[in-house]
Image (cartoon, rainbow, N blue to C red; front, top):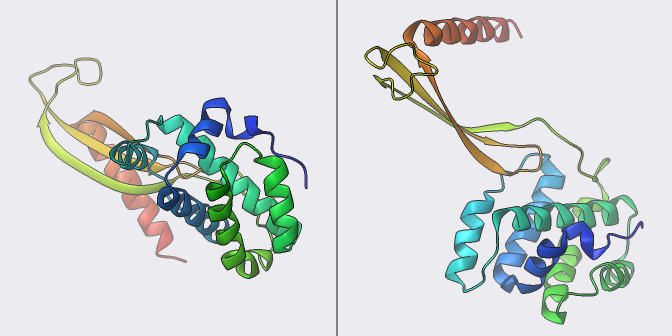
Length: 199
């Protein structure tokens, strides 16, 4: 198994991995396994950071995203190589030697529990995937930005997208459209829906 240097979790990411509370580390491991099994698991790093802060651990969302990526790589590569529990333990000790013993035990326990389901997967190593729409909201209001809407006195539609990228990181994007832009957007969605009805 090619080694994942501590830098694979990124310097600050490695520190975050070493300081995560065991329950949150176990949850991250479970989500990494779910991502390998389904290919699509949203990972809200900001929300997980808030939970870490509540537990007294200061960590940045980018560092947590690196930890999630490193765990996905670790479980995916171990599954692809069909590692036994003993082989996984050896690789974990080599690759993540900076981890406290308790953290290593949490990761090992998740592998022991999920090994059979992961080893059976055809392609367990995560690949870049398309994003996933998590939530979509809109509202009609007055323009608050003159860039997208020609006049601040015209009505506009504000659309908020909550999207998980290929790694499962959740981000929110908001756009403003004039009513005519939104009508065009709507007609394109109607066209897509009518095409999908033929399948």
